[in-house]
Image 1 (cartoon, rainbow, N blue to C red):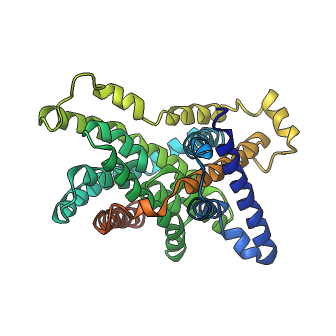
Image 2: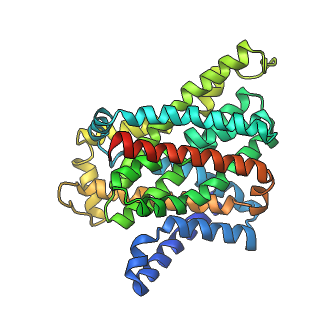
Image 3: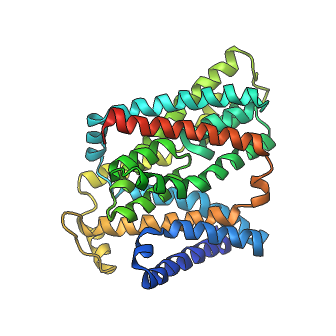
Length: 368
């Protein structure tokens, strides 16, 4: 942790500058100050620093830590702002969301394998694009990589394609939601079912929430996305069975088994997220030391929202900005273009299909 502090401080500094720039923008244009998200500014600043100035080796470990573990901390704290009863009501009222997730996974893999074969893209990269575009971006690629015996280069290419797509979806999807006049809850479902990585889902939902003037899109997207990520267990097990019974990739001596691979790559922060949400649902954060903590930072209850929940919400959002600053500071534009145009085209086609499927579900089935 001591070795990583310089990179973490750099990511925090970029996040603070992003927040300051948004405040400055709001001074000149209140409208732009409301709709432009600091997450976008943080990513762009990070990319500029990485590709113009460069990020030294002494900062690299901390930047990696910020982009991964600070994001996990942000998601866990976000859980403390949500009510699990409301999540249950959402899925009980709209079970079609679960069906949409399952359909999108099947659709994404079908397009990735079918079109990918026509484009002569190798099996591993097709798998990564199908899984990354339908479940949880880089997390899915990290989980499936060892199972299908992909090389480090193939994994890096898969991550590059998915990350390339994420950069555009963060900006384009809120604009699309506004053009389609989606309600905050509808956009939350769209972001949670159609955008790849968790950080990108939260960034896009934050932009839309600022446009709408409330946090409904952000909260809905969080619940839907983390539910969607849990499908990784089933998909990873399915690929493990295929690898075992079709002898696609027999396990070599000394290699970790399926369950060890799953345990290592599964996003366990989902469990912590649910625990924190459950504790908040039972009012565990509204009294005692937590209430005192909110008072220390001069937070007070707003309508029916306890002060500590408001503190957790602001803290979670800032940590997400720090994490996305870390993502930008890792982004080498040259490496993003290495896979070539064909994998990127396949990723765009797969993401577009998932997007159309989600919009169709929202309009025709869920009626949100």
